[in-house]
Image (cartoon, rainbow, N blue to C red; front, side, top):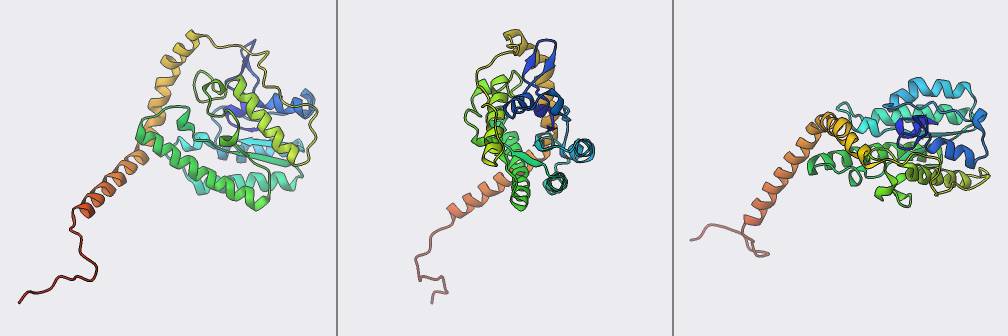
Length: 267
């Protein structure tokens, strides 16, 4: 498992202050025990982190199946560069494919439908996710690797699929993600020992106080930090919208000229 905090399992806490999440669910469905499962993901990871840090460690273990969940953190940064992200993913997929692994990247959903943002910030984030997905689609098509479209996962936009922070999947969300990944692998010919259950068990249910604590301690500060990174792009969107509005008003104000009629000197 390569990627960011979603790949780590954030959002699916278990007793003892640890995280479980999508990785163990996928491993269990494939019949892979703890000794055969390796999760190299870490919170905050970006695409370049996967290429430079996680990929070499993964190759050293000669994996059979590799799930790659990364890119969302990049969309929230001021240095967002979709071409560079696509190039990094290309490098990762090429190396793993050459090593004989089945690689499964994910393409992203419209996260603004889950984590509500002000209009301009929502459009800025949506633009970036679409650009990220465009690069992922190109890599997937070029290599013919399987890919999970998170927007197509049943229940992906249900609030019950998301944790307190609305940034990471809940236990149910991780199970939905794992089921989607295993279905993609099954279509690729990978044998499943058992399907991923959607019945939640073994995790820690968040309390109302957890929701409030997250909002005060992490939610508002996070929105402030990431909002500042998105503001320049959001401002460009507003400026373009204003220009389009002015052009539309000018067009509407111009008198219509009958077909064939041309203005000319009178005399």
